[in-house]
Length: 195
Image (cartoon, rainbow, N blue to C red; front, top):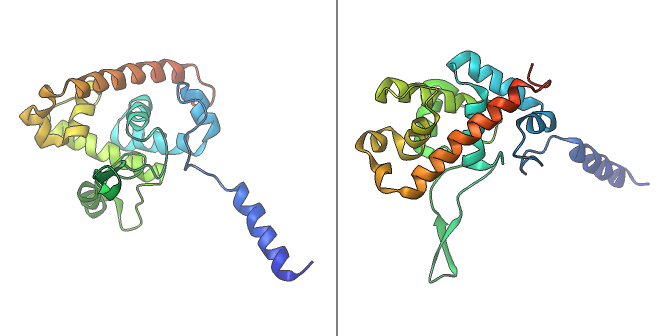
């Protein structure tokens, strides 16, 4: 067996052992199953809880809604004439679906140059940073999942203007995020992986 072939085989084998978060966890309706499948999420969620006071089930519900726990998730492309791609609907990327401008603000104020939207630890820290600023600027408590989500989706300025009020679909989704947060909270309370 040639040296080149052995090296290529070794790279393939090692690459298949690496953690792959570029697909969704298998059971998105079970917080314990998510944490069992992706144990490094536990450290990221606990760190965000210590730093920002955000309950893990709240972050998990928002990540579910934003990216379905897919690290490199992006919004769909837009098409001209139905077939010619003209770019993505927004610059959102990663677990948190942070927009370029908001992410750059986070990197400058908190995250540092090495922060990456496709890294769960950076994404949960970003979300904690953003939600804490939402408390300061809007008065929405951290445990008000529905309104925190609305402010996250619309931006704090949009939230204060009430831009969400004319978007029935968004109000419905905010309710779903709140419901999923309750479900994940109940599950985490009995989850051995979390304790």
